[in-house]
Image 1 (cartoon, rainbow, N blue to C red):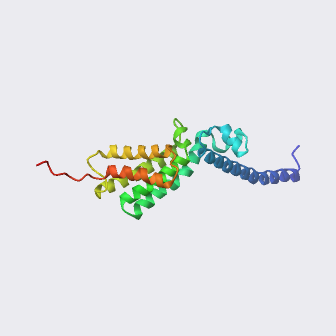
Image 2 (cartoon, rainbow, N blue to C red):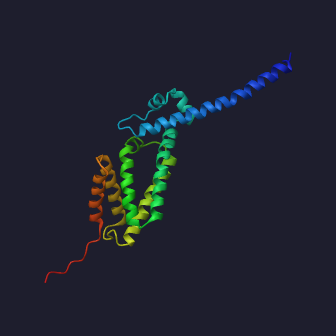
Image 3 (cartoon, rainbow, N blue to C red):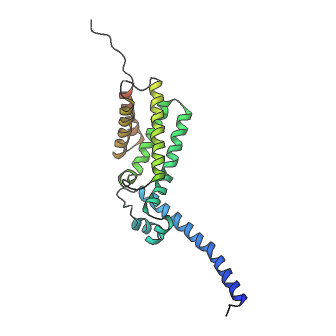
Length: 208
């Protein structure tokens, strides 16, 4: 026997009314998990596990997995959220002034960023992070553009291979960040010494 029309219509209305609520809950859960992962990325020694992220977000681990499809996708979204403004800032600096000045300003800000987000480099190896990988490549490309421009302007020595210079600058900035400078003045002092070493040397007269 078929159900009365009134019953079928009532069930339909209940179903369609509940769907927006479920979608709103899913959006809320996704936002909470993303905020929690972003916060943990800034905490030294924090474990970036699904359980830790779920606890910080006030959610169940299954809810976090369901919201993103897995830990890799969640961390990719969190790191991308952090890296996007860094890449935009690099591009803005390139457009704003001489390459050497842009490089100095960018390294200062990059050191602050790396010092504040320890887990980005220490806990993400081996994960599938396509968006993060793309942004990191953009960051490396922007830095290389600054270095090449500074070399063309005569602000950075050219007797060193470009790849060596780029690696040295990147690793020095990371080392300074890991050292946790106690003030912006100390960061500037590190960078000044680095740039002094990168400045082209003046030819000397041969001994007579």
